[in-house]
Amino acid sequence: MDVLRDEHDRTFAFAEIALSQIRALAQPASPRNYEIWYNYATGYNPELNQLINQALEEKGALTEADLEHIFRFCIEPGRIGGRIDAVNDRMLDEVEKVLDTIHTATGSANEYSRSLADTATILSDAQNGNHDGDGLRSIIERLVASTREMETNNRKLEAHLSASQQEIEQLQESLHAVRTEIMTDPLTTLANRKFFDQSLAKAMADAKIRNEPLSLLMCDIDHFKKFNDTFGHLTGDQVLRLVALSVKNNVKGADFAARYGGEEFIVALPNTSLQSALTVAEHVRRAIMTKELVKRSTGEKLGRITISVGAATLHPEDTELTLIERADQCLYAAKRNGRNRVICETDPEVKPFAVQVA
Image (cartoon, rainbow, N blue to C red; front, side, top):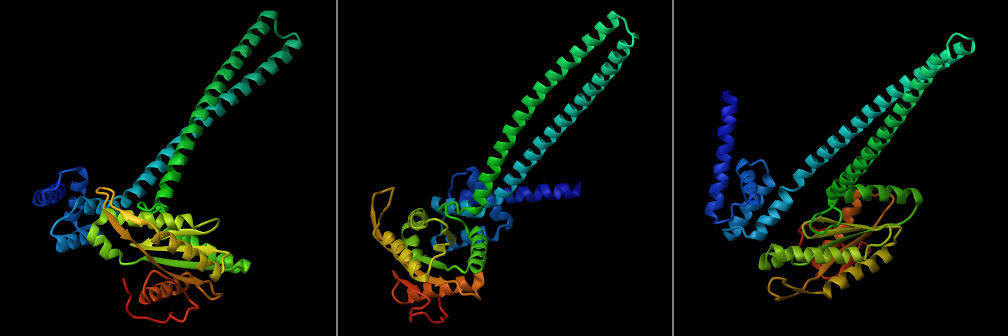
């Protein structure tokens, strides 16, 4: 009882902290904001606390865009696992119902088989003169009744199995949707880093087995932090979507791209030489720099953005880590040499460096 009381007091203390923060910052007491501040009060989500503390330290307040950003990246992903478990539980329940139906149908079929066997025995006896006409009539009536009952049961079974099949198909679609969500960056709809890493490992293994080239592009938005701080997270999100769309439009066939973190994007190009990869990189870079940004809420023109790109190609001894590191090295060589350019691992500008340039 004391343990329950302690838990009760503790949760109410967290709730009071959450509400006091909402009041102090004059925010709407919406379920989303309450959840953010309740999580903050518990301290169980260090990334959330870090983002909030950083925003408060820099600006003294949290904007609507800040709150939406924190909720999307710190709270929403944790709900996906629970959704998968719920779909799995429903699917297991449906499969259990199907098995029960089949078990019942099997029992009915066995009973009908016994009835047929008994009837066959009785008819055989009748041929030997052991049953009169009334007895035979009764046997046939029972057989007809059993047959009709079996037909009714079969129709019920068919309807039940059809309904279960539809339910299972819907659950499979839900599970596929959730799994897709797990593999996707919610803001840009590109693959996320985890899925990209898994896909890259497989693509590299296939390339080595087939003795085919594979190239990698590492892209980073130039001066993104300054842009984000100047115009806010919502406009920053718009920039990320624009870059993602330009990347997506230039990724074809077996190529695959991902948001690798923050303002960084990565593209794997299977069966693509380094020279061909540079052509893809130039297409992406030019597509982005030709677009003029406009703030949706006001129509204000915000100028243009650019990206820097590093390109590397697969070596026989490469692991995923070494290939990515080499592309990353080329990216920061592009940053050091003026940004808004593509540099590959064979360019003379590439050299070891200590300080990364934002």
